Amino acid sequence: MENLANYEFWFITGSQDLYGEETLKQVAKNSKEIVDRLNKSKTLPCELVWKPTLLTPEAIHQTLEQANADDKCAGIICWMHTFSPAKMWIAGLSAYKKPLLQLNTQFNEEIPYATMDMDFMNLNQSAHGDREFGFITSRMDLPRKVIVGHWSHERTQKRIADWMRIARAVADGKTLRCLRFGDNMREVAVTDGDKVEAMIKFGWSVPYYGIGDLVAYMNEVKDGDVNALFDEYNQKYEIVYGSDKDFTTKQIKEQAKIEIALRRFLKDNNGKALCTNFQDLWGMKQLPGLAIQRLLADGYGFGAEGDWKTSCLVRTFKVMTDGLVVPGSKGNAFMEDYTYNLVPGEELNMGSHMLEVDPEIAVTKPKVEVHALGIGGKEDPARLVFNTIEGRGLVSAVVDMGNRFRCVVNEINVVPPKAPLPKLPVARMVWQPLPSLETSAEAWILAGGGHHTAFSNIITQEMMQDWAEMVGIECVVIDDGTKIPAFRNELRWNKAYWDSKR
Ligand code: MN
Image (cartoon, rainbow, N blue to C red; front, side, top):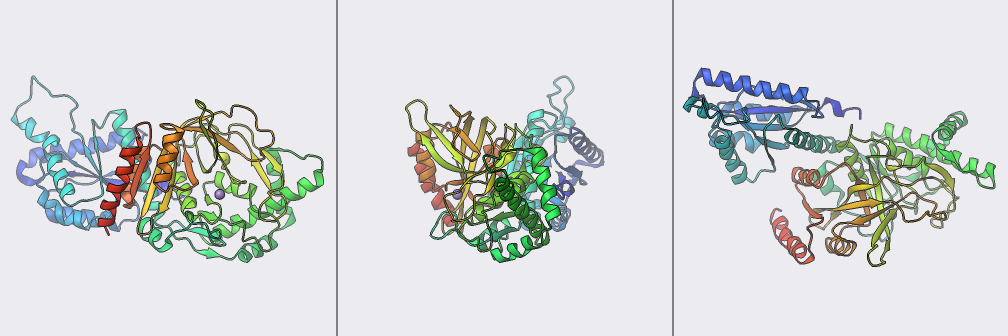
């Protein structure tokens, strides 16, 4: 994605001037080497920038204010190579506004039993210094992440990389614009919410546009452009013409026209996400289906029925996993809980949507099909139909609890449909929710999680918890350890905590 490569993270080493020049030289040399080796590992999604060792309250304050002011800086990683008295950090940390990772590592992996003297102990005391830093961040109740492990270990590097991806998505979210064509679906509660609070918390801007604004763009689309895009569909997908080839072609070309108009509209209005509402299509012949699926595949966020929260979350997932999506193997999608299989021992949840499932998660070559929608009173729309990737993943929703947002996460195991679904004219996904359909659905419903979700088989629950920590909202996870009585209590305790934060 275009601007994500520009982000960087600062590596900040803490110490003090008590140790003398020789030791501080070694501290700088060691931290430079760590930064250099982390950058060369190719594990990190962004460049890590080394900063001179911080020794005084003034230098700390100045550096953290510079991190705030620098648009490229998406977060800082702090490491106390030696002891660094934490009162020195209070002014700087009070001013600091971006994601903070405390890396509790040390330069040496192993205790050098044969040679270790007091000088070595004074130089290599992260176990000591990082506890002092941990105390002050805890006392100040700062949003933060702690990762413990040797910096050369694959696991440590992977966790740093995941944290960076989340911090980068949080930075990107500050400028995210989700264009809403029409308002929220009439009378629906869970898809609605406080747009002002969303901008304060996440940075998400969700401006409204009349559907007529889009229709005006559609009227400007030239036939030549529509035909060229139709040819592209023909190459990429299998078009199912059915009994009336002319009709099918006409319906698909209408989606091509919508796609071209939407791309231009999004570009002109700086939108990276959008939502539509089938109740608000005045002047349009079809609900956008194929057009939306094509935009999803290109990294745009989408939510149906005016669901701007899920649209922004889908876009956020795409930013979080930029560079990690492998078509047919790993990906993200806008998803909706639809129907259950409740046969004992075979409990499953089937997700889909009327039209707009993301081809990022297709395992079969998508077919373009035209069918009646049976809702909205418009012409038969074209859509992509396919089966989806299998294996472990998660679904997540952000809901508005009235005075705050809650993020709900459920780990799932996607399985192949037991039998073909010849009469279901939409893309679909079947999964076993953890720990079981019964407990998962009970917990999800108790948490108020909606029917629209963002799916990913790349993002982990740890990444979702990091995201919630960075944006400052509640996150509840339903996984193989979930038990309903404890989960109910967690919701109640969380309510007390989050209500007290306001
Ligand atoms: Mn829906």
